[in-house]
Length: 142
Image (tube, rainbow, N blue to C red; front, side, top):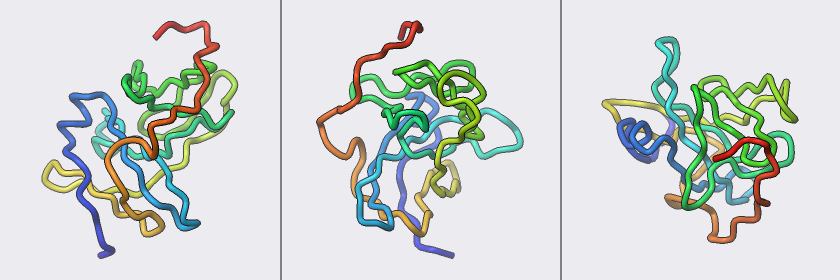
């Protein structure tokens, strides 16, 4: 089994609605990773996605507010596209027909572990304190 790094608990992700950590990818870049609850019997109870919308590279998880999760979907704060929390697929809005980039995790005894061989854990939370995402231009209110 590949090396794993303990991240947080499934319970914490469910209680908070989303959870963020930063890892170094295979290119040596800091990459934010979003953990979200997945509430289907066919999938693990938590999924991990790179914290960027596929449309305009906007952060989905924002410091101080987390990710907006509605009816099992992660909402892009810029245009309102909704990505299925379990599959990462978006079938609406500006990001339609795209899928978030997944990150490999394991879940064991209620604990979430980073197991992606191309990622190395760096820290809990955002890569830096500078949120470069613009304010929402969506018609949706958060």
